[in-house]
Amino acid sequence: MANQIETDTHAKLVKEALVQEAFKAKVFRAEKIVVDPRVRLKCRVPLCNAYGHNLMCPPNSLDLDELKEILTHYQWALLVQIKTPYAEGFLGAKKVHKLINHLEKEANRMGLVYAAGFIGGECKLCEQCVGQGSQEPCRHPFQARPSMEGVGIDVLRTAKNIGLDFEINHSPELIWNGLLLLE
Ligand code: SF4
Image (cartoon, rainbow, N blue to C red; front, side, top):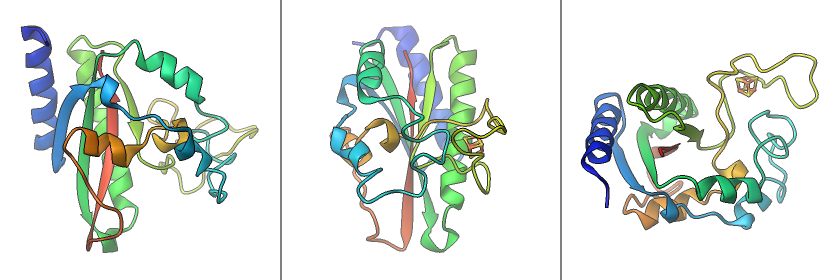
């Protein structure tokens, strides 16, 4: 069970997510995050454009064992969802990324110093990522966040696990997900 301080902090973060532009937001036990190596396999089969080219995607990002070890140190996580019209394309990805950056900062301000954000899909802050092995470093190192899928998190099953089910490509609207590990 969460103590009162945790409960208050969680409620404030959910409220902040909804005040910003989340369509849904929920704090849940981190053990409900589904990790599956097949998700990471899908970065290579078929080969994603971001594989080996985006600094926040495999093989640059955390591997499965690292993620699993890290998750054992977290009790709580926050999943946020943003809904955007299909016609807006990747705008929703940028919106959810911005929201996760904001909520991570808020969580830090509330004392959750290990709060760490993840986004759905590859980091799209730049038109084109500088890429693996580039002489140029990441252009936004404090904002760039890892792809959930790239570290092996099954976003669909995690969302379903906590009652925030969504579908892909079955609606004129798209649902974009972001995850914040709390503490
Ligand atoms: S901020 Fe830009 S350079 Fe950095 S990981 Fe994201 S897309 Fe790549």
